[in-house]
Length: 78
Length: 381
Image 1 (cartoon, rainbow over the protein chains, first blue to last red):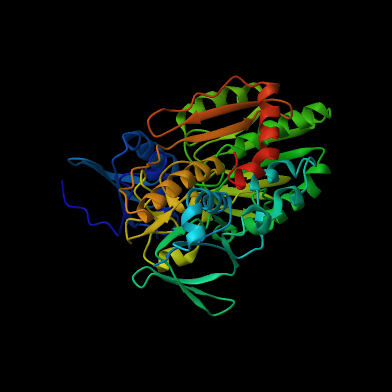
Image 2 (image 1 turned 120 degrees about the vertical axis):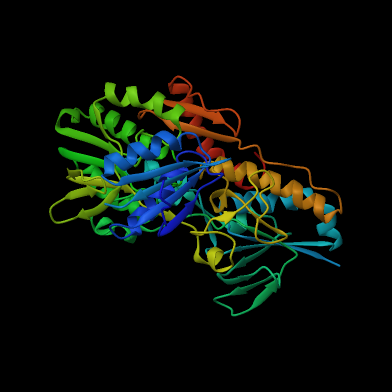
């Protein structure tokens, strides 16, 4: 997988649900079209919340990286 | 040497803590070994849960106000002033109005939430709220005269104060219009930013079927992007547009700027250890209530319980003993499910909520607690 360089990173590790998704939405609000936001979350619910919201909002989930103790989601603002 | 504890914020958390310390450290205060200062920018304490009832004509904003001086004992130094800077290295606070400074040995930040409707274009002009005194009275003027049309409640910002209150509002409005024979002429729509009707999945699972039964329309994954007050529409980031005749919104929240300026956390929320409530970025600094980024609701019960934990930890530290008290996430909420019935939830970090069956008894328990809150503020309940 080619390495993706995010424009901004939201570190929501430690946040309870739905904090990580809301943190991502907040960052997407202020981002420019085409920007890539990386969300770091260790909440299991994010694995379903983030893809569902990205699809609903028309943003593209470019990649999901499973790391040792958290997951990184790369979302590009449409 | 005198240890100086400074509490910034005279809401529920700060006021309960001031009373807790006055009681717990009474000997040290009498001996002059400890000073406790409570700083607030308003001489009055405000009990915000009253505002839910104001739009329905059931309470007045004045019911939620009492002079802080009546709620804290004389042994606590009450300073009505506005902090303009926090220096955690020098352990000092600066003030706006007087231009003075004070030094602290222990600092507790209980500065609470502020509303930021201007983050969403059109929201301030187009939407009402009941998360402020002026918002609640303005909404009352329109809601009491509202007899037909589209009533939309939109949760715009999360995390927000009292996570139950948006559900309570639509349940109460549904019941209120039914009792008055107007429900068939009023459509009620509830919007929420994620794919559920509440951030907590257990409360969401409990609430959703009740909303469906009562014909409360639901729009999930609705993150308001803009409001057009002329056209009376609200549009989401996800591309949904809703017409409204009366829009009630839960505006975006933030803490005070000073916290970010002091390097204690983002958006005015202090990064803390969620068990000890100690700030991660500075020594001898605690945060509690809405201000502490713990992941639990921004609710009065949380501030109340956290104040007890911080009070015990401070007393231990001042006495030179290891501080062992910790916060377990305890949260209690009454949840109105109509004008005459309510549910109740209790949960913590480990145990999820399981809402109680709605009953008239719980409704009266909520109203009774709202009256006896003043005992809580004084540290007696």
